[in-house]
Length: 190
Image (cartoon, rainbow, N blue to C red; front, side, top):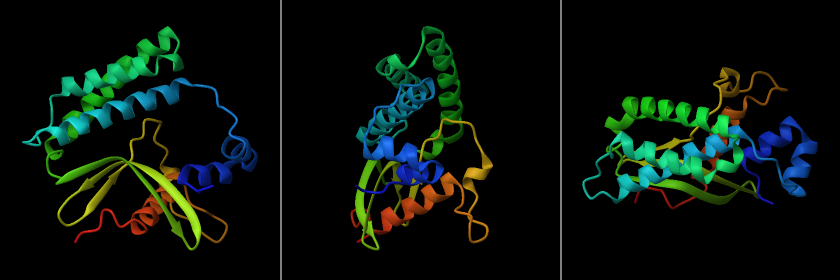
């Protein structure tokens, strides 16, 4: 067993849920939120692979991103009722268009992207693992992007306060990503 940020957060929320889902591997029911998140992830992953494949490294048009999202919604159709799918398709296209409008001018700046970057390493003898949605590689630094489609909750980003506080889920995830990247040599600068 390798500890991931997700499994650690699940254990801290409820050790029994962790045991059933991560140790016994009892299948979970599909949900609209899960299907929507998967469709968004799929669209962004394929879109950035398109950008990586372009010799000029130009960000493709927003329509390409939206088409990938439609394919992702079809791929995860079993997570939705017909009404949920219709509403999720509208919501996703609005979110992705807004995201594109805000950031697409910066997407050609990294030298390279690693997408769905899988890391397995150790920290103080404990096997840890994680899959980073996107690593943007610049000449002088890296940026990790983790796609979030749920509702924003500021408490998830707060660091620990006091001895008994373990910080929020996203704070622990950021720390976990730092440990993973420090333990993996593949992205180090020469």
